[in-house]
Amino acid sequence: MSKLIVSKDNQLISASYELSISEQRVILLCIAKIDSRKPVPNNYEVTISVDDMAGEMGVAKENAYRDLKKAFNMLYVRTIYIDPNDHDSQMRWIYKKVYFKATGVAVISFSPDILKFLFELKERFTTYKLKNVSKFKCSYSIRFYELLIQFKGNNKLKVDVAWLRTALQLGDKYPRTSDIKKYIVIPSINDINEFSNLKVTFEQVKLGREISHFIFHYSFKKGVNDNNNPTKLTDKYVSDHARPGESWADARKRLSLQLKGE
Image 1: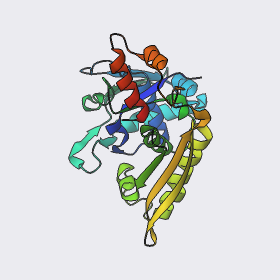
Image 2: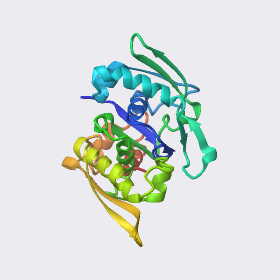
Image 3: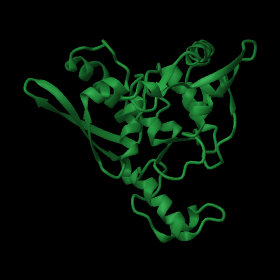
Image 4: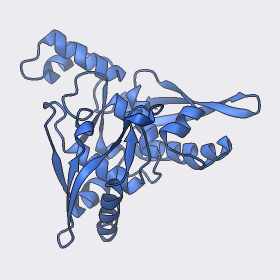
């Protein structure tokens, strides 16, 4: 069972981008290999392999070669807007790539502008176990899971449909909100309920005859949070999870913010 951890700045979770399920898997594998506590480097490259795709993400070995290569090539041209409402904030996920076909190994260099959302994370970041999203089948499921886990102390999240269109870069795709519900929301929630550590239900809010918002209600299965930590901080937990050189007060503040998803 994978023990890899994904950590992202919350701005990256709320950013506007579109990735296929294979591209999401590759990006998450790369991020999971990062020590998010370290200072932001000048450049950073990650090596992942077909074995990683098969072992960590559960992709069949015969499909892992195809998925890794295709995702690898597409990621090179994918863009992301950190501020969904500001298209001047456009950047690329990666700026350099090398793929060794014979061995099924890929080397990816993250774009410098992305690194600050992956390293030296102290506040307002989200952490979760890679295994909780590794079996998702819908390309949007990971986005919904991250939005929910980001606000894990709330158990309720109201999402504006207009914002959702922008964040997922839907453009003219699914012009009717009922189609967003049918082809994006429902499959994503089904994935989350079946494969992750969350249990989710949702309702819709209408403005006239049109759906304007979705409201998600969610909780952790078995009453634990993403990292199997208690849902309420204890002194022992703070002491056990303080970082080297970190005071007890600073550790408690950091862990409290992390628990709340702030």
